Length: 396
Ligand SMILES: *Cc1c(COP(=O)(O)O)cnc(C)c1O
Image 1 (cartoon, helix red, strand yellow):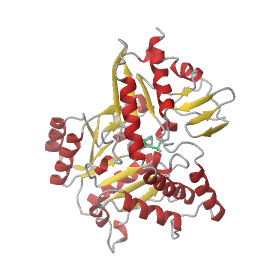
Image 2 (cartoon, rainbow, N blue to C red):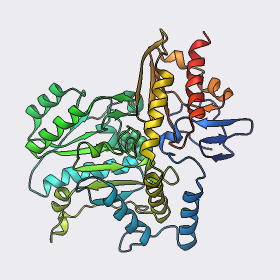
Image 3 (cartoon, rainbow, N blue to C red):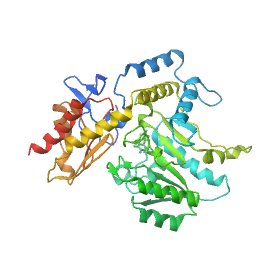
Image 4 (spheres, rainbow, N blue to C red):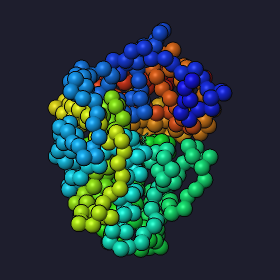
């Protein structure tokens, strides 16, 4: 039997069984549903996109996978070249892996070894309160969300701060000579509750990281590819290492990239084999995933997705502008993400079933009801999602 994620198997609701999916729609035996959360935020092009499907099929006709140990192939070379051109600054060195969590692990390893390769001992990582960086052990450690990882209590080597400049300055003051990196979800902290903050915090972080040679790592697994209304937050403040996942492959096949700048790469580049990065996931650079990612980036640029995201944000603001309810603590909107935070999680109990009846798939968690829509969504579909949210509160 299947062991489902984040679920108490004894009490969980039966999951909806998907028979087919196309565009923004999921189809079950008795309902057609708009996927308001893009399958954990990754299906930005929608389902069964003919070009993505064709790209994967064409590659499958050649080969599905060869390892990168001693071998290479065109799709992975194409993706590295595309990312190099697509990403800002000198983020040019792509290390591929199979999931966002592993991508974060790789970034943390890079930051640690960046220092040891230079004969420096810098054991600490600075991170944000309410951070979520994945479910593997080191990623959990830098995470700060009891709701996900309460069963594993081990936080040595990580300092957590709120997204406030004075706290940031104090942390650098106290620990600058022990920090190897500052790891953040830039502007939008997703799984920690769709928490939004401003650019000046990141600009100040960039200054402090420069001053003390601490590597700035952006975990853009969730925010990358336009989710915040910026293509990448890295377009606004340049990190030393950028982690991409989720939307990288449009949700067609799991893959991630940890992209380092020249400074980081140079610290490993040497005649000494012990300075090499010792990491290599079996499925890194998977050919099907790379083919999907290349095609996805092509579509993203050609179809001007940034304009689509601006439109989604404008419609979201228009639809949610005047909406209030005493049970709602805050409505926040950034790019392609809308979050309705309520005071009491009980307020959202039953919403998923309510939305199902109205043709919307939603998955609120804790006190957060949110949408992270596929960018190909039409206006009336987006309005249907917000109408469903509003109807839930209006029903009494
Ligand atoms: C989802 C997520 C991860 C983990 O990615 P997986 O592919 O699920 O391992 C890491 N960081 C952030 C910010 C995420 O949203």
